[in-house]
Image (cartoon, rainbow, N blue to C red; front, side, top):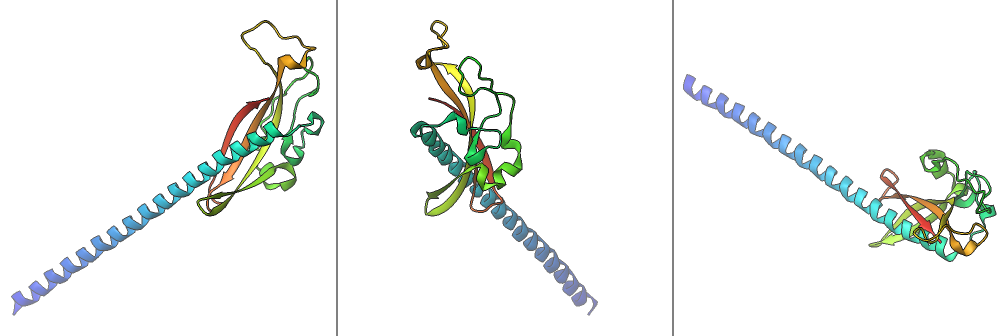
Length: 179
């Protein structure tokens, strides 16, 4: 009679151990699923950011930008933190990193907003365009003439903050653009 009781006890202990191993496997599987979902959301935000950069570049390319509208308040996403934006000879870009200021991304009056359809999902992105003064059109040729605007390009830095499937996942991408 004693042997039968010990067999029951050993079986119960093994059953408890198997239950614990099974619960740990379920928990591990759930964690892997969350990691995969977060990675997918980050990739979605990155694709949204890339699309946002292309649209922001098209805006700069296709819009006759009045440099007087660029200012340190970044109204409508047009930023300039230097001096003499309209003077090729005297333009100074200044030192700035407006994209690091979280307030700029939360103020609709200081950014341009985009909504993009990626695989049937509407995703949002915000961008700012910074005027960074002028670059010589031909960097390998002779020194450009400061009085000839055709020998110079306007230089911009575009920053996009794009979101994944929710506001919890975001990426920030930058590019420079001349025209």
